Image 1 (cartoon, rainbow, N blue to C red):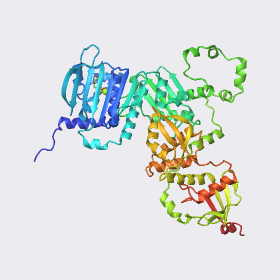
Image 2: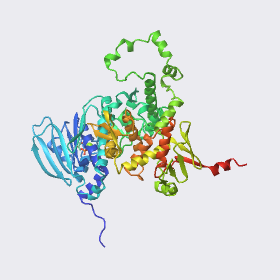
Image 3: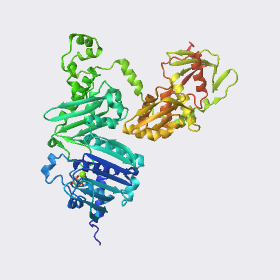
Image 4: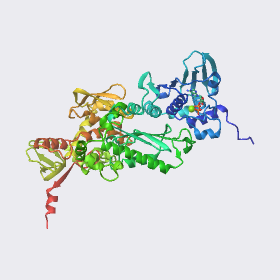
Length: 619
Ligand code: ADP
Ligand code: MG
């Protein structure tokens, strides 16, 4: 019988090993960027084509490699970063396993140009299927320029697994952003298909945070900073108003390495307790620095978990630091934490407050909060009224309902056209045009109908009306009103990508939005029935709702968008309406295809029939 065990040829073994490190273009991006950081560069340029599927190129001005290292770098376990097991416990570099370049070389066509400052000429190396095919001296700038083409060209199964360009680009931007946030002292740029996506000048941590989150965060970040012998925490949390429905804009770094930690996230969420609604997430960019011997980073390079020697201490520390920062913010909301050093020296800031100042502050509610127990760590609770506002802002969008089923079940409600004097009829419901309508609690409209009365929920009814209107708009575009003063929207990277994705659908329902430079958009026009002046808020809210929705694969993108729009633009409960407005609403409602429920299945009105009413009063 033939033996069945054999040794895998090198190139197959390499491809398998590579799969652990390089799963998608974004993983290669991460490795190459980290190598550039480790090489001490202060300028790193990332160039990609087709979301990294065709090309990933990283150009750095770091220390470069000599001709021998340039070839050896691609061997498995080739690293300059550790030479003994002890080194592992003091590691400060991003990489140390010597696997990245070997993996890249196994699954892409790689070329490298690199030069060290002391050498006149650099080295050029070409590699395919893990084999160096060519090396030659070359004139090039100091630093390293590495490009990998046609990722997974030799592993078609993997190539087929790659997602759409927009999905892969999103992953790349995520990795790029993480590295850039960790190293604000380095200039970073990203070019995709020849287009400048980002170029972030080197600067402070705050400047980089604003590059990433968008200019609107200029006044919305609270600085966190605490130091002990054991560890340091620094960075920013977003003010409560920046809390989101989704877990975007949450970054945690340990020794400048991006990590995911549900445990530490919990500590931060805890610090925000009572300040933001339960189902929302604070934004934060926090950096912990700790003696490397206190953490175990000897996990797989692509994993982002980390083990602390004593994670309970870290938890308490993170929570206290964030609470402290928030408390300071709530007692001194107008003082920007990044005041420049000259301003910090001013008397007004240095000198103790005068009696007069003290009296005036003592009468403010902020002061009252501050003087309660626990002082600095006391965070005033939000009032019930405020909470209610938050709640309605973040109110859940019901996501489950089977539209078809509802529609079929309610076939009997299909509208027939009106006949003189009566406007609309929806099986059994006829409302007279001249009827006097009654608004109760600014929410419900009582309308006499031919056989009793109906009670309409104004918000839900309007939601149905708008839903059908927007649905029809997908056949015939909705009217747009041009903005007299176009509004500029500045978004976070993630939101900008999302908006790009839905921009065409928004156009159909009447939003005319155009890209306006980096992460910015200009709103040129809004649906004819949206009140202008509020378009910025409307779009931001729409994006939030849309994100919340987007996990729901049952619905098409457009369907989700229409639902969000209808929900958002509907008149709200609590708004007082005139007879004319109420009649207008009921007329449009009864004219709907499916007047009796919202798209998500909530009833829009209840029909009280005489027979039923009589029954209620029978002894
Ligand atoms: P690791 O980063 O874990 O050491 P890599 O496979 O990523 O392993 O890189 C192998 C080696 O190649 C590094 O240790 C480093 O010496 C060298 N190297 C890689 N990229 C660069 C670069 N951009 N500049 C200078 N040297 C580099
Ligand atoms: Mg590396």
